[in-house]
Length: 237
Image 1 (cartoon, rainbow, N blue to C red):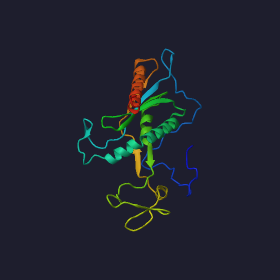
Image 2 (image 1 turned 60 degrees about the horizontal axis):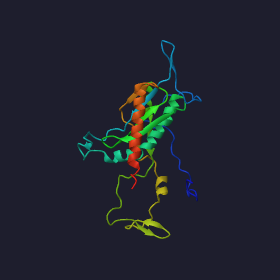
Image 3 (image 1 turned 45 degrees about the horizontal axis):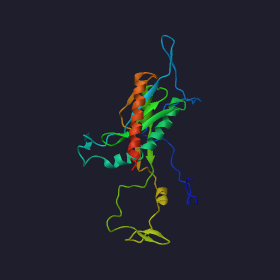
Image 4 (image 1 turned 90 degrees about the horizontal axis):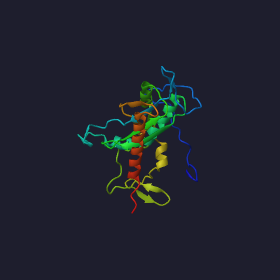
């Protein structure tokens, strides 16, 4: 079961569904009831249905050498942590945008792994093909907004911590003011606290089923997925 048994105590929040003005628009195609990509006919009359192997990365947070920031004082650790925390939501939005542009229910097989700088990146084998120009447009137009209260200002620390009072909640120890709950704080948010986007690096390779390139891509994805599961599952005692 998901959700709150008692339901929300306040009304539903209204978030704007309009696209951000700093994000480019997506190309549009009419949807078709299929999961297959386009076919192409070669000079000899043979029909091909190519696929894509795509890698998506996050932007730079500062220069890194051997996996370590060169200038720790200026490296954007906060943005790196927030991007990693919400990376899965950015991937979900990318898949939604990919299917809108492709015009069919794109099927894919993907895995996420850390780079040397520990930022996550995505390897994705996509059934069907789109022009590289459109793949670049989709990545540039994809973003995810995190609607959190601001976390840039420290209010309570050390011995100055909120105090709990039965029947009231947490109080400010200096003023006695009742502090808002997380839900109440979210109701007051008018701007996203963080916006995730992909980096500018573009890596798209076309592959054909049964070719060495396709076999290599599948082996790479399978190995990456296996390594990820090995890291997640502790060895038996």
